[in-house]
Length: 67
Image (cartoon, rainbow, N blue to C red; front, side, top):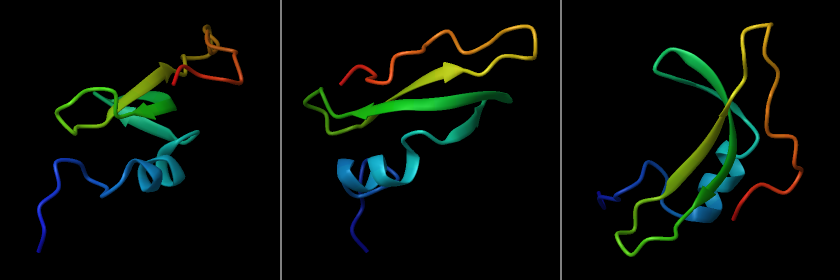
């Protein structure tokens, strides 16, 4: 079996599966804004936005997240 530095093999597959989904990170809910491969190490970076707890709303309201 081939070892990959990321959970998914390609950035395209990662986008298809994760972009716009909700995830738990350290027990807190977040929405996945974008996934990038902008460094030379081959590890994808995932940018998250906290969802809030009823008193807060999503702060990021741009339909075009950063690349």
